Length: 325
Image 1: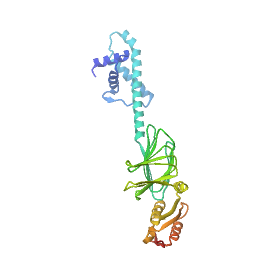
Image 2: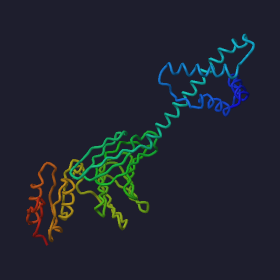
Image 3: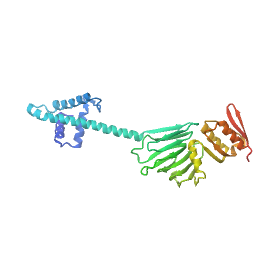
Image 4: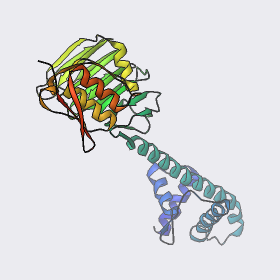
């Protein structure tokens, strides 16, 4: 910047007549020393003191080479004050920028939690919501909800959600092209990639389910079944709400469910590889899968109920036969 232009800017700044654009030009000049940009904020008082001295020295040497030393003394303190003010503005601008960058980083920062087969996790969000992840699930959520209009997460697998109430910031669970919107409620979602159907089972509160084309409103103790390929949505009453709540602890209730579906859950929950051979895979099972019982105990129970045989070959359990029609 030319000396005359710089002199005009500093005079306007000291007199309070500088425009916003002129102040910005002045500050840009002070941010550069010997062609290198100053790094703010300063790491020590000594570094800050030296910065002030450099600013004052720049004013003295470049702008106010006065033959009248008496006049120089009169404006010296004004120069010193102006230098300190400029430094404060520079540091303040830096912190403001850094604060905004930090906020932006938080808004753009996401956490990912995954559970492998045979694993369960509890995730506590910053808004007070709690999510129980079942085995083989994945949750992606913001590191913080501060400054966000909506509390949005992405999910796949199975989980029980206990969402904190916040009427100004709805909670939305995105699964593929579907969304489940709530304000404060408890519900279970089963949305496994391997299954053609996903379900949302509501215990308390209200839920709005949508796939972008059709929508369904759920009341407590109701569930929506969504068929991924056809887009068909079906709403029905939950026969046993307690069984839905128990799933978050790993208890699975089966009421005439095909053995193939039961084993799919079993293999995921126990990280196992149990196979069903023959017509037994279509036999209907009535019973309970408990996290406290061993794999062998449950499989023997399953085989007994469907009148099948449990065998083991090279470490793999196989269920054969079956007396069902």
